[in-house]
Length: 287
Image (cartoon, rainbow, N blue to C red; front, side, top):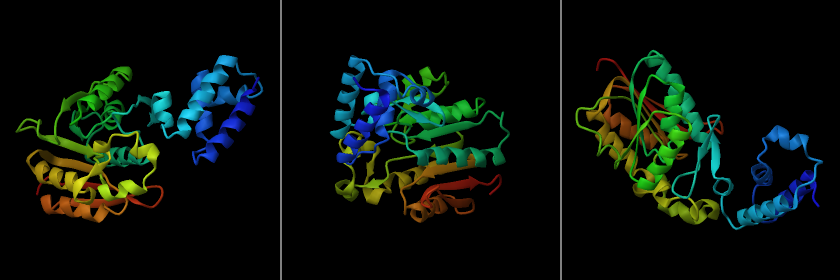
């Protein structure tokens, strides 16, 4: 029989042999035992039941083949909340938490916190941006759009589980948004990886996450260009546009925004690792 710490040590070493993160062992064991981190570490010298050993080994082995940990456990944490994830949606990344943090900070300078503003999340995927915005700012009217019906199904499930009143709509960018609709805040984390980068990426990502949510034409920039062309017809003043971008794309995306909103304020924001990961455009009240 294994004690918990012995199982963890074995799994960490085994995963490293396959170039996987050793920390995945802890996430998988916590999932099998339905324990949080504190509970796990308080019970490290307890023995694992035989069926738990079997299940744990199955999950560790599955991860060595490239299946993401989040797909094995069915969820990922984002902004302090648990979101269901699967093969139809991107796994949430820390960079997107930063996008939300900086977007909310800028919105608080533009609007009263209880102001009923209209917010749109384009390319909502699992719904992490739209749902987080609604839960952080309950007075907002939030809509999440995506071209994928399967992604929208996942987003609706997450909204239901987290009790967030978000409207989800199938749409290719702004195509299904009614003419005359005015948007105060638009946030988007669209596909932005150039197709040529696929060869150098981990099979954990390429083989298990939806390519339509990862890769984009025009060196990864086509959706930013299209959104910037469509947004002037919809944006309110004052207002905020916020994009997550691939490292090195900041100036190019900023140029699209400047072309569409030449008299407004654009800003490139760097993430915790010093990479240009966010581009914002603050729409001034009177232009």
